[in-house]
Image (cartoon, rainbow, N blue to C red; front, side, top):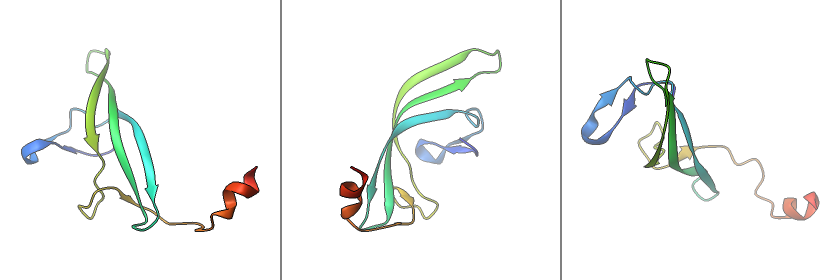
Length: 84
């Protein structure tokens, strides 16, 4: 995380500012967005202890919509065949 976290009920915190979020994403071509589900949060606390917790969360874009806006590079379904 690079900035202040906005949690439930609009609560904000800097305590997890340098945390690493681990999850999975799927690209959605129709909306040109990556929908990402966060599954693990890993952070080093002020005492130097590593804390890793299972979490449930989703990434929300700067526009307030679900997912992160991206750029579709190629809509061709032939790329998969070309790679093999």
